[in-house]
Length: 68
Image 1 (cartoon, rainbow, N blue to C red):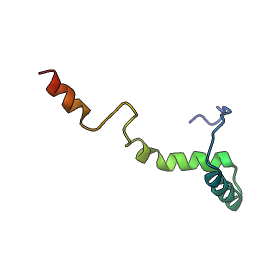
Image 2: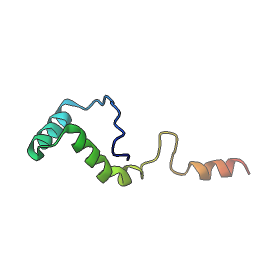
Image 3: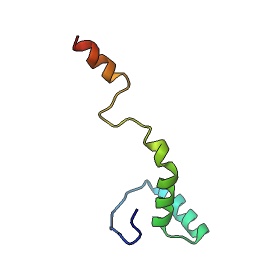
Image 4: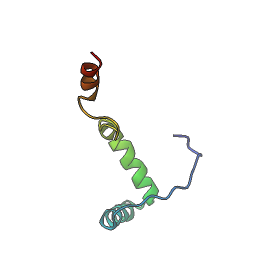
């Protein structure tokens, strides 16, 4: 990610999750943004394993069988 490219974005979190993020930010003396960015960098490989909304396990197999 470019170091100086900063874009403002609103994100919405459940109240209890936001409270936990705020507490962790305070504990580490970091911003909420920093905590969320680090969490994404740590979790993104795992999250990218999830299928997209339009992908279903076995969907390609079913389409191949239908086209025969």
